[in-house]
Structure formats: structure tokens, C-alpha cells
Amino acid sequence: MNHALRVAERVATEDVLSNGRVELGTGRGNTTLALRAFEVDPSENKSQWREGVEPIRRTFLDDPFSYVGEHYKIPPRSLVPKPLQTPHPPISAAAGSPSSVETAATMGIGAIMGGLYLGFDLVENMVKLYDKTLAATDHPHPITPRKMVAISGGMHCAETTAQARTEAKPLFEMAKLSTDAYERLSKLSQDYAYMGAVKNIDFNDEEYMFASPTTSYCARSNSSANT
Image (cartoon, rainbow, N blue to C red; front, side, top):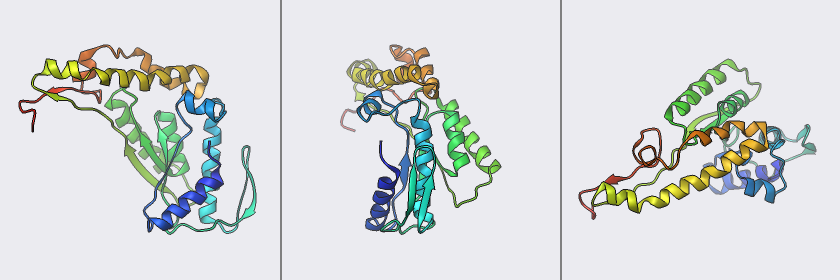
């Protein structure tokens, strides 16, 4: 969706303006709305993303830099301005599956991990996989290892648990909306097949949605509405 050189230019500029506080998060996209709007093929965007990280890294490390691959053919050029951070701003990847976590560790970049409503055990295993893969990989260039876990949730306080659950019904709809795209994507490309696991979760199960420790969505009663 974004050309690697444009990303590198923007990140370098933001690094200068922020006095060296920028981190770059990357990803291949996970909504059919965005993929279709930018005419991105779901069967190719993983290889496009993976290859795109390399020219970004080269713009930061080499002067002049160049790159020739399947998706990018960049002649010798220099990046202006250069970022402040050395060797370069940290680079990470959105990683929702063990395969993506392994890829990020192999590349020597960080992994931003999430469980996709499948529970904390999955996230814990992905964190361990990242450490194991990173330690077993020889990296010919400077690396920016990061382990980040993205956990989102909502809270609604009311006088009673029953009232809180009733009033928090919109959380159900938000969960259904955000995961509806996952199953559709799982049918478009093998790279997204793991997202199909959400079809086994009953998002109409209030106990799972509100009370289970494996989900980020919960409603709790509060004895004081003003607290």
C-alpha cells in the first residue's frame, strides 16, 4: 500500500522532528476494505511486505543504497534526511500468527503480537518462539529486536453486573465487526488461513465474552458509579 522509499523518507523526517523517538511498525494489512481499495493481492502482500522492509533498512544503513528484488528495483540513491537514531529507528512487524512471529525474528526486527481472541496461551507461545528464533538466527546486519504484545479491551461500570452486561452490548458488536474480516481473509489466501480459527469462537457466548480470562472483553459491577 505504501512504497518502501516513501516510508523511509517519512520515518527519517519524523525521527529528526521528534529528536530520535520514532519507531516504525509495519504490516501487510488485514482488512479486505483496505486491500481492495489499494488493489493489493492478498496472495502476494506478505512477500511484498517482507521484501519492502529490506530497502527501508538499506536506506538507513547504506549511502548510497540500492536494491533489486521481485517487487522493488531501486537504483543507487541517497536518503535525505537521514534519521537521528543509530543504526536506525527500530523496525517491527504486526504478527498475529506463529509464522509471522518467526519471520520477524528471522529478519531481526521486532514483533507486535496479538491473540486475535484466541487466548493468552497463544501469545505466550509466540513470545517464546520469537526468542528462540532470534537466538538461532545469524543476522548479517544490525537488528532491532522488540517484543510487544497488543491487548485491547473495554470496561463498563454499573450498579450491578446484570446492568453492566446489558449496557455493554455494543462491545459484542465491536468484537463481531472486527473479527468478521478475519474469516473472509482466511478464504482469500493461504497466508491468512490461520485467521479462520476465529470461526470456532462463539461471540454470542456472554460468559466467554465477559468473564473468560482468555478474552479481552469483560464487564464488571462497581459499587460506586462515581468512582
